[in-house]
Image (cartoon, rainbow, N blue to C red; front, side, top):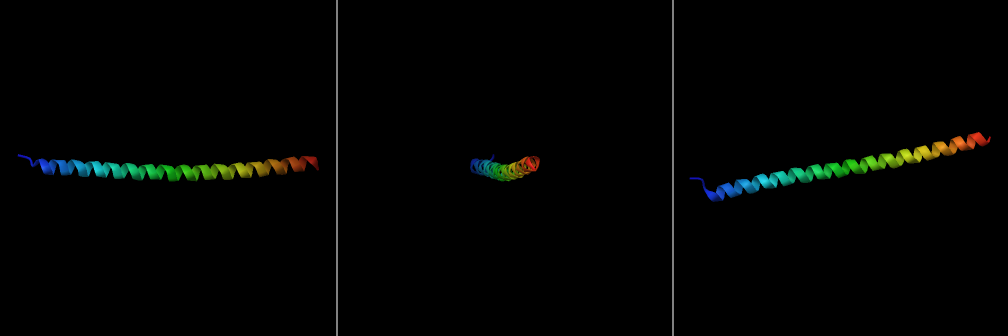
Length: 60
């Protein structure tokens, strides 16, 4: 017969492994999200500067 304690232990180990994988994927997602948002903000700044330069050139 199977040892119930061993079955529970294996189940808990699998659950802990799945939780660790989920936490790692979740953290990777948020790191990537922060990087993308930072890049979007940088692109917005570049775009605003470009528009400002274009409007200044039209006035001359």
